[in-house]
Length: 603
Image: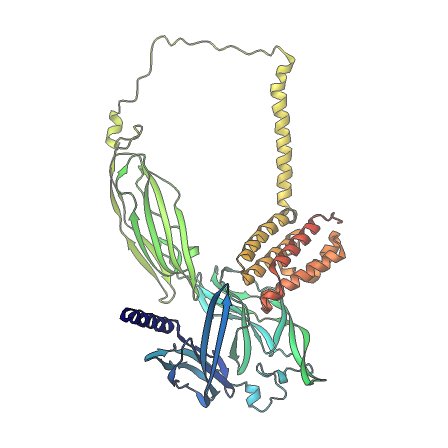
C-alpha cells in the first residue's frame, strides 16, 4: 500500500508540473490609440488559476476602470481524445490623455507560488485631428468616427491622397535613397487600382517586399489617417542633376455611411463613391561624385571592406588556380564593377565570376560580393601577384576611402601535362622540338579532278540553293525581330504562361497576397504585349477598346475587365481572403487568355 501511495503522489506531482508548463500569461492591447479616446488592455492567463494580479502603469493614459475579471473554459473530444482549456481575463479600461510614444511594462500574476509576467509592449498615443480640436468637427471627416463620413460630404483632397516620400532631399550618384509610396485615407477603401504608376527615370530601382494592407494609423499635418504602403524601393541615381519621380494616377472606391430608418430602428448603410487620385511629384538633387576619381575606383558608394584569399595553395602548370576577393559592406552592392588585378603574363587568366549576396537595409543594400579570378600557370617557377587596392566613396564622409589588399608569392610546380611544364629559362633547351626531315619524302603529285557526269554539278548547285534559303530566312527573321511590337505580341502568351506557373506555385503554398500580385503582373503584362499597349497607357478602357479591335467577343472583354477588378481588389483592398477563391481566379485567367489566343485577328 505504501508503494501505491508513492506512485499516486508522483503522478499528482507530474500532473501539477504539466499544468504549470501549459500555463501562459499574455497581453492583448492596441498598438495605437487617439488622444481622448477610451481603450482596453486585457491580460489573459491560460490553463491556470491565478492570484495577486498586478498591472503596470500606462504613460500618458488615465485608468478609468479595472481590473474586470472574466473566466472561460472549453472542452472538446475528437476521436476519443478529450482536451480542455481554461482562461482568466483581466481587463483594464484607460483614456488616452497625452500624445506620445510609451512603453508599457510587464504585468504579473501568481500561479501556485510561481510568478508569471507579460512582455512589455509599445503604445503610441496620437494627437486628435486638428480640425476636430478647432471646433470644426461637424464639417471635417475623422478616421475613427463613421458619423462624420456621410455621403453628403465631397471626398476632399485632404481626405484621401497618395504621397511619394523620399528619405533624402539630396544625395550623391549611386547613393541609396528609400522611396515609399503611401496611401492616406479617412475612409474605408472598397476598390483600388493604379492606372498610371510613377516612373523612376535616371534611377536603378531595387523593389522591397511590403504588405500593402491598411493596417495602421498615422498623424500627418495634424490629421489622423489610415495608411497603407503601396510601393517601397531603394533608388540608386545614375546621373547628376535634378531628377524627378513623376506622379501616379489611381482609381479608388471609398465607402461612406448614411443613416436610414428601418424596422429595427436607425441603421447605417454603406454608400460607395468612385474617386480619382493623383500623387505628388518628387524631385531630388543628385550631386556628382568628386573629381578626380581614384584609378582603382569601381563605382562603389557606401561603406565597404575587402579581403582576398588564394583557394589553391599547391599550384602546378596547366592546373587552374583561384584568387577570391570578397567585398563586404552596405551601399550599391549590385552596381559595383569588378576590380582589376594584375596577374603575371605567364598565366592564362579567365573572366572573373561574380556572386552578389545583398539584402535591403534601410536606404541601402547590405551584404557581400564574391569575385573569383580563375587563372592557369603555364610555366614552372616563382611568380608574384602584386598587392592591389579597392577604393570606394563614403557619402557620410564626403570622400574616397581606400582598402589595401595583400599580394601573393606563388611557387608553381610542374604539372602532369608536358607541353608547357617548363620554366622560362628551359624553353631554349627543350628537346621535344625535332629537326626538319630531309631526304626522299615520297611526295605524290596532285591530280586535277575532272567533272565527268552531269549529277556532279549538284554538289555545287544544292549548297548554293540551301545557302540562299538560309539567307532568305535569316533576313526575314532580322526584319521580324526589328519589329518590337510584333515580337511582344508573339511572345505574350509564352510570358503569361510563365507568370501563371509562378502564380500556381504561390497558390499551392496558400500565399494569398503574393498569388494575386503575380496574377496582376501576368494579366497586365499579357495584354500590354498582346495588344501592343505601352505600360504608361495601360488601363481598363484601353484594354477594352483594343480587345474589340482585335475581334474578341464582348462577353470575353467583360470577363477580362471583371477579372482584373477582382485581382486588384484582392491585392489592394485586403478583403477576406476566403471571399475570392484562388483556384477559380487562376482557372478563369487561363480560360480568358486561351479565348484571346484562339480569336482570329480582325485588324
